[in-house]
Image 1 (cartoon, rainbow, N blue to C red):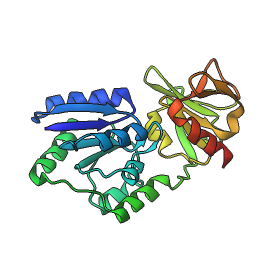
Image 2: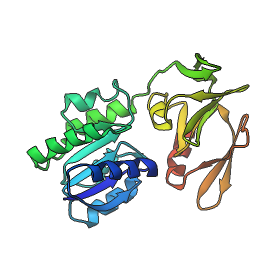
Image 3: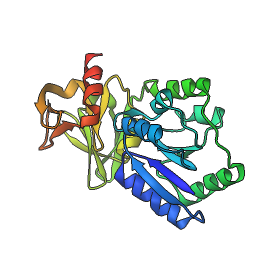
Image 4: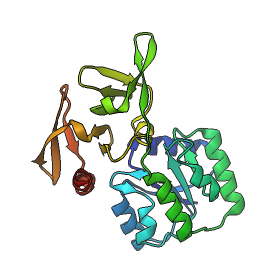
Length: 250
């Protein structure tokens, strides 16, 4: 079976490959793609694979945008860090998905379901519209549980300047303090108001209010000067620079 993985997090892509290896499925990995743009090019130039694992949030946008540009004649299993509220549209429309972090038994169940159906099912336009709407609706999370001493306290999302990941730990920075957040970058970002927060690269989320200046950076990227940087550099990835500028203008 030929499989294509569309995933912008190298660690998540590696984990998925390891889980597939432990499954009973014999497969050939065709490619790993990390952007909407590259996925569109791949589908336009190649024969459809037998199965596609597709992350929702890619480096340059939502993977649903792929279907608006090119026809995908392959079964899709979406992988997502979105919470239970956001994935209701998947359940309603019977779209296959796996919630991150993916577990072996859940992957095996999805593969078993695929092997039994073994049919190519394109996403209908109305279903695609509903899925896009469910992902793009800004969430109104007011607070985040953070570690403090041996316990936890809640801080307001409005206090967050930025979030970054280091050594598999997620840190949240306010004007005065650094907190440990017991969530991954992807899962946290999926619950934040995207009018106020932007995931500038795989390991950093920035609040619009924290950005003091935007400066040109090499390889068509931009560098951000922010409030309370704490020895962090903030480089917007090349794939996201154009979308980031649009976000700043809104």
